[in-house]
Amino acid sequence: MKLPFSQLDANGRLRHLITLEGLGRDLLEELLDRAGDCQPNSAQRPVPAPLAGWTVAHLFAEPSTRTRASFELASVRLGAYALNLDMMLSSRAKGETIGDTLQTLESMQIDAFVIRDAEAGVLERAARQAAPEVSIVSGGEAHLSHPTQGLLDALTIRQCKGRFDDLVVAIAGDIRRSRVARSAHHALAILGAPEIRIIAPAELMPAAGEFPGARRFDSLDDGLTGADVVMMLRVQRERGGGAAAPDGDDYHRDWGLTAARLRRASPGAIVMHPGPMNRGVEIASDVADGPQSVIFRQVANGVAVRMAVLTHLAEARRARGR
Ligand code: NCD
Image (spheres, rainbow, N blue to C red):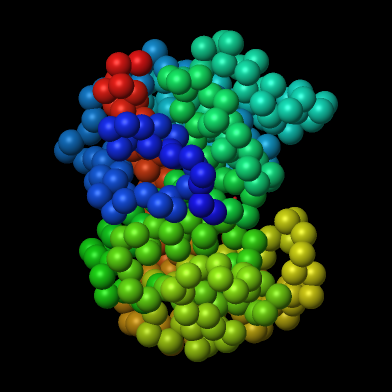
């Protein structure tokens, strides 16, 4: 997804965060470093309340556990007031457009909106109409983009592997409908991972031309061989399409990550999953809970990454004098 407008301000800092695509390596590394400083055990925690006086509105129009909880915690831990609107219960469900909802809330002095929506293009429309001091942050847009997930995945890989420049990263499952896979691909390509593999049955493979540079595999066993990082994805039936894809036990037999299959990967390979997991379908329970799994580290990193993004936006706004 190429954005026809810039997410950056005149200083090259983020004004909004809608996609990682097109961002520079330095900016991504700065966000990862900053997220490291936001971790509970970091000696360099940021100034106590960089978002004091801010209100961050979290507008989620799709189910969410990890992303929503971690954004809300990030806002609160940075000193902001978090306004949490369940969009499935808001006036949007009565036919109000997202534009009208945003304008309504902007009149109540919101500094940043975190938005999750099933419709492609909502985030960009929100950013175009936002008042100059207001930032728009994606909490997941359709199948297209989930930039803070891409950042937390990159942070987790960097912490576990210490580098990107010789890594083989295997992403397996419902790639076609996955915004997580798209943002991971954006992040890893920018950060210099030399080999990104996408592994899926034909029905769940993205269209030709998507995921430029990635190697495509139609067998999990082949795709896992020699991988340093294995990222498993849930089958997202709720997004429609891909109806011919195998189901339940059949899926697990051919496409599930089991302990035996994981032995094909590099000995120190890490296992990732953005959640929610369907245990016994795309991943066996003993692998999800096993020694190579970093799934709960990803969750912890989600809070730190979202703190880093919000702090960056606040600093960038101060530098613009707003
Ligand atoms: C994912 C999402 O919503 O895109 N979850 C998440 O944000 N951690 C993946 C999914 O729903 O399968």
